[in-house]
Each structure stands twice: as structure tokens, then as C-alpha cells.
Image (cartoon, rainbow, N blue to C red; front, side, top):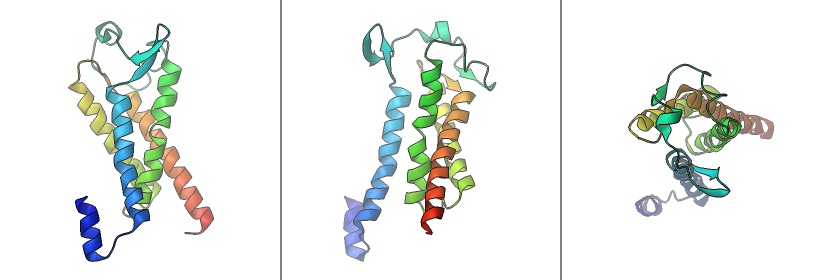
Length: 158
């Protein structure tokens, strides 16, 4: 609300710009929802994941790439696809919203740092596990999204 007031006062209000900026927290909220409160199909019901993580992940972090990616649990395919797909919008929305993210490497670095923040925060959570594979997959999603954005931008001549 304060942002709208300031924009009107300075006569720089742009509906398009404000809607783009609203997409940034929307991406962050959706990702936070999926990361910290995942939904899984368990025993015929869709609900919050309720698994004893001490049996699956005796250690709360994994720093070795691709060691646990394929053999930890039955839903590994969904984990791989989900970690990539959920970050594709970040790769599209962030360069649209922030002018300084004007190249593929800058967007990927910002996405990597955001993913690093998420993984570090998961160390503090009892039910979550920080995993380098998630960082790789999430950054790959950002890369794909940014690739789409910059490809479309180049083709449109802007």
C-alpha cells in the first residue's frame, strides 16, 4: 500500500510494473509453501508429509552431489521434477521485475543464492533436510526459466 502511495505521489505509477513486482513475493510464497510444508500422496490421501525423517535421513544435510538423488525413497522422480519446475517461474519473473538481473549468469547467481538461503534455513528445521542436490536442481530450474525469458526477449527484439 505504501508503494502505491509513493508511486502516485511521484507520478511514476505503472500498473504493469506493480503487477510484475507482485509476482516476486508470489513466487517466494509458493516456493516457501512447497519447501516447508510439502504435500505428498500418502496412503491414498493427499496431505502434509508425515514421515519419520530420522529413518530416511539420519543426517540433516547432504553435501555430496547425486548420492541420495535416486535411491532414498519411492518419490524420487517427483522430487527431481518438482525441484526443477518450481524454480522455473523465478528465472522468468526476477529478470522481468529487476532491471539489474539483465543476463543469464546474473539471474542464475541470484537463483543459486536464494536456493542456498533456503537450504541453510532447512538445517534449522527438524523435518527438513538440506541437500546439495536440491540446490543443483533448483538452480537448473532458474536457468531454464531465465533461458526461456532471454530467448523470448531476444526473439521479440527487446
